[in-house]
Image 1 (cartoon, one colour):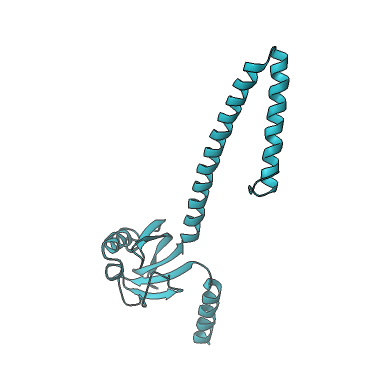
Image 2: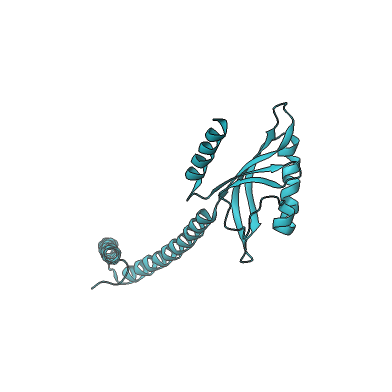
Length: 189
C-alpha cells in the first residue's frame, strides 16, 4: 500500500509539473542527482547519477560551491542562476535549495526546484524594446510639437491668435494619432 501511494503521489507530481517550466530534483551528499521530475531541455541525456561539475563545466563549480555552502550546510537558498545551454548561450533559472534530512536529522543531500525563466526573459526583452520605441516616438512627438509651436508663433499676429491656432494644430495632431492607432499604424487617409 505504501508503494502504491508513493507511485500515485509521484504520478500526481509529474502530472502537475508536466507542461510547466518547473523541475524538482534531489542530490546526494556528493551532489549527484538522484531524482529529477521533468528535466529541463538543457539536458541531452539524463542527469541522474551525474554532478553539476559533469553537466555544466565552469558553471558547475559555482553551483557545487553554492550548494555546499547552503543546503549541505543546513541552510536554505533561493536566487537566480544562469547555466549554459546547448546552443552556446545561457538559460536563467529561479532556484530554491534546501537541505534533505534523514530520519535522525542528519543532512543527507538537498532538494531543489528550478523554474525556467526563458519565457520571462523573452517578455522582459520585448518590454525593453517596447519602452525604447515609446521613448523614441515620444521624443519625436515632442520635437514635432516644438516645431509646430515655433511655426505657429512666427505667423500669429497676437497671443490669442497663437493660442487658438496652436490648440487647433494640437487637436489635429491628436486626431491624426487616433486614426493611426485605429488602423494599427498602417497609415490613414
